[in-house]
Length: 308
Ligand SMILES: Cc1cc2nc3c(=O)[nH]c(=O)nc-3n(C[C@H](O)[C@H](O)[C@H](O)COP(=O)(O)O)c2cc1C
Image 1 (cartoon, protein in one colour):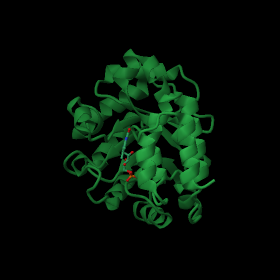
Image 2: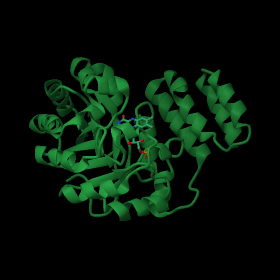
Image 3: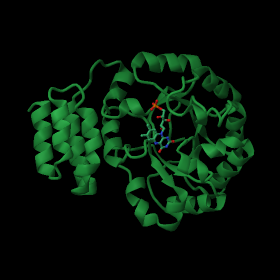
């Protein structure tokens, strides 16, 4: 098993639009145990694989590494898996069974797979049948409208999933309903495979509490890592204020420019909005970078606001 579940695992959540290669590489420097690609549409991968290349490429730091697929049709899912089979360095294929975005759900993908355990079973089976990668996982929620996570999790297990990540909300709970950690604990009891708990984990104490309540095999961190890749060192080792914002922001910026070219300047704006939180004159800094497209100029602005 390329994942060590003998001690709690700290994973970075897939975050569409955020957790690209340069960001995941930054997070790995602070000890994240597992990283997952942004969700990739199986359709796009199956019919236009070259367009998805930047989405699935990984940094050499990322082992183990998971690719997350979003799909509604088992046949297209299998075609996407066959393309991934030919790529080296991918340890896990993860199925997205949680995205609540209307355009995804309307197409029968993401959280729509939670409407029926049999449907989820058929999708996980499709990956199981075609994947040549070591592991298969599912990232799910507690249910669609009502909580039936136990039945859904068992369907995943029976279809061959090696582990699960559970975001402790239903689809209807979106991103702000209270996270039901007890329900994650019930899912953990319902299956034999490892379960990773997810939802609103943002501190060392919170991670310990969640592990205690759920008895889960690990935790997954999403929003708390945005603009703070160092949170993994704080969570795993109780290191207070690891924040080395300037150093991290600059090296993350450089990695982004290397990966995307000048387009990286625009893509990096959202990260800078987060990194600059709490700094003097942050509002003026954000306005200035929003109007700047030159990488050298933006780099100089980062150095100026965060101190040389
Ligand atoms: C901007 C954003 C993008 C997300 N993209 C994905 C995605 O691509 N795949 C996925 O399974 N979940 C995605 N999620 C959900 C997160 O992975 C995670 O389950 C959720 O944010 C709860 O964890 P948190 O409270 O630690 O952020 C996304 C969430 C956010 C806020």
